[in-house]
Amino acid sequence: MKISKMVSDIPASPTLSITAKVGALKAQGQDVIGFSAGEPDFDTPEHIKEAAIKALRQGKTKYTPAGGTIELKEAICSRTRNDYKLDVGPDNVIISCGAKHSLFNLCLTIFEPGDEVICICPYWVSYPPIIKIAGATPVIIDTTTTDFRLYADQVKEAITKRTKGIIINSPSNPTGMMYGKDELEKIAEICLENDITIISDDIYQKLVFDGASFFSIAALSPEVAEKTFIIHGVSKTYAMTGWRIGYCIGNPEAIKAMTRLQSQSTSNPTSIAQEASMAALTSDQSLAEAMRKTFEGRRNIMVSKLKEIPGLDIIEPDGTFYCFPSIKGLMDRFDGANTFANFLLDNALVAVVPGEGFGSKEHIRVSFATSEDNIIKGLERIKQALT
Image 1 (spheres, rainbow, N blue to C red):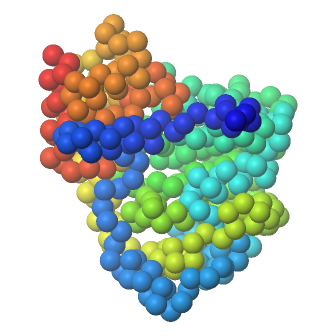
Image 2: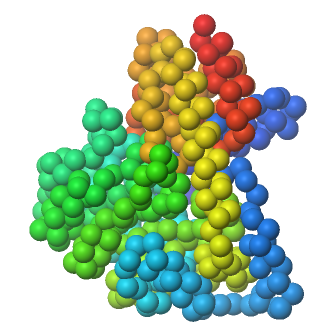
């Protein structure tokens, strides 16, 4: 059967492809250590699961409004006012089937063929494909030579008369880097001067380390907030990846248009998952903080062990649960990250995600969303396989 060109051009997600291969090896009885996970290894907290069970028992299993329930929207607004000091209301919010879905809806709503959207490389694997599906063109700013830091001058150089948007992901998947307020102010000023829409992907907002404070570009000023859409969700903070609840906060007119689009595609997010998400956002946040502290401890172990492996070079991440080490010192043995990742899976039974999907063939992404024992054992296997 003929497949449309648009769909034919969409690459498979490298993270999901690696996960599938690891699953197949484990089904064969292989002792594979996975550093490819893009999700917390913790179970969803009990009080959140109980909220879903309660919703089931109360019969909350019917359709909800396409853009989500008013109760969950109000909970999101309350959390946003608390965390961002932004005055937002339900008209500023759409709830979707995951943060990726929110981003997808947003790009289809505000971008058109001929538009350009700036992406910072290394980027999350889905940014360029989603932009292309919208008919726009991703314009890549390479930060692999600036220690994964984005500077305002780089943004200014990338802007053309067709530039309509920029995606900022801080802390970043895959690098774990977080942008400071000073540089965000400069970038925001450039965006305001050039009428550029800012998409702030804040999904890792709560996973920051070393006592650092998260700061979103949306919180700079009312003028910047008006040009910014926040992409967020419950998956990373509350270990709720499979519940598929994400949301977008922004201009009410665009949110209304996104809701029309969603009503003709997925319709509403799962009613039960919305009830569970409301419990996550409105309850005591101590369990989320405990998970964050655990990730910080694992980050420290992984960075320390990565530094012991000849040929790898690592910049310590500010947040998330990823490291993005360079394999430049091994490029005399491997022609890129894909080859290296396959070597590790075949020879060390360790799964990593090659950096090609993130925009760099000289890096791999390793997740520390796994136990300390697995981190130590897996990195020792890599070290041995390379000697």
